Image (cartoon, rainbow over all chains, first blue to last red; front, top):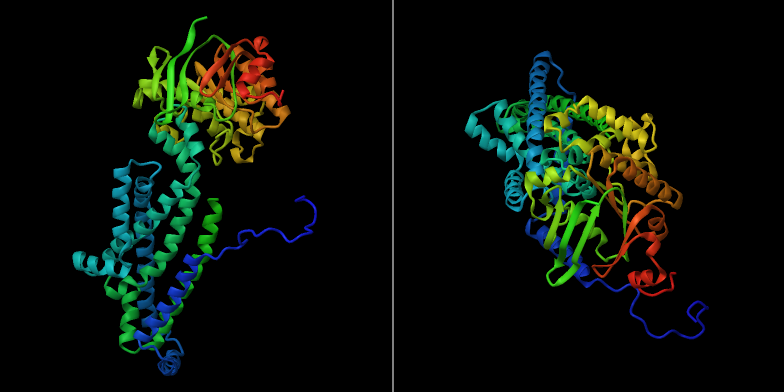
Length: 269
Length: 252
C-alpha cells in the first residue's frame, strides 16, 4: 500500500536529484578559463597594491574641488550641452525605436521584415556609443551634432531590441479578439497592441534617457560635445580639482535623473 | 428558414492527413442559439474559428452574405468579419483599456486609424456603446473602468457588448461560460438567448455544459471525432446520443 508508511526497504528507484553534468562541466570550464586569463594578463597582487597607493595620491590631489567662477561657467555650459544632447538624442532615438521595434517583432511582421529589422538593430548594438561618436565626429565634424547622432544610434539599438521583445510577449488573445471585429492592421495596432506595450515602452524610454545622460558626458571625450571635453582637458592638464568638480556635477545630475525617472514611470503605470 | 450561414464540406487539417474536421456541412439561420456540444479536442473551437477565419480551413465552403468566407482575404475578409461578432472563453478584452474603449473596439472595422488613435468615434457609436453597456447588465459607471478591474462575469458582459457593437448578422461564442461560475454561466446564456431573440441574430455557441445547452438552445449539434453525429432540437437529444458523442456512460 503506497499510502501506508513504508515498512520494507523500497525497490531501487532512479535518483531523485540527478546530476546535471552539462552544467557542472560548464562551471568548471568557466573557472579554469578565468584562472588562465588571469595568468596571461600578468595580473599580480603587488601591482594592485602599488596601484592603490597611486590612487590614494591621485584622490588627495583632487581635494578641495575647484569652484572658481570661470571654471564653474565652463562646467555649466558643458553640463547644459550634455543634458541637451541626452534629451534630444533620447527623443529621436526612442521615437525611431517604436517603428523599428514593431518591425522586428516576429509576431507582427512577416519574416523578411523582422529579419532585416533585427539585422539593423544588431549593427546598431555592436559598437559602444564612444566608437559610434568617433565615426560621426569624422562625418559631421566636432560638436554636439556628432554626439546626438551617435546616441540616437545607440538608443535605437537598445530600445528597439527590448521593445520588440515586449511586443513578442504580449497577450495574443487580446489581439485576436480585436482582429476578429474586422479591424484594420493599424487599428489592431492602436487598440490591441499599443495598450498592452505602452507602459513598458515608456519605462524603456525613461531608462534610456537615464543612460543617455551618462553617455552624453562621455561622447565629449572624442569631440562629440558636452561636458566630456572639459573633463578630458582637465585630466590632461592635471587639474584634478576641476575634475572633481565636474564629477560632482555629473553625480548630482544622475541622482536627479534617477529620482525623476522613478516618478515618470509611476505616472504611466 | 433562410440560412444566414451555410457550411459545405468543411475540412481542416492542422497536420496533413489528420483531419480535425471531416466534411462538416451545416446551415444556420434565423434567430436563436445553436449549441455545439462534444468532448474536448473534437474540433468545436476549430469549427467556430474557421467561420471567421481565425483559423484557415483546408477545404470546403463557408457561405455568408453572398461570399465564400473560406476564399476571402485582406480587405474583403475584414469586411466580412465586421458582420460576425465573437465572444471568447477568456473574454479576451484588452485589459488596459476601459470598458468603453473595449465596447467601441466593435466599431474598429468602420473607423479610420487616426480616429481610432484620437478616440474620435462617431457620436452615435458612443451613444450606442452606453446603451449596450446597460443592455448587457452593467451600469454607465462601468464605462470608464479598466477591463482588468472587472470580475469574470462583468468581463464577459463587456465581451458580448463588443460583439453586438459590430451590429453583427451572426454571433459566434467559443465556450463563453467555461470560465464562469454556475450562476453567472446561466446569466450569460440567458443574455445570449435574449439577445438573439431581440436582434433576430443567430448565435452559434460552443458549450461543455449539456444542461445549459438543452435549456437555452433551439438546436443542438453534437460532434465527436470531427464529425456531426447529432443535429436536432434539444428535446430529441437522448442518453444514447450523449453516449455516442462523449463515449462511455459513467458521466450520465
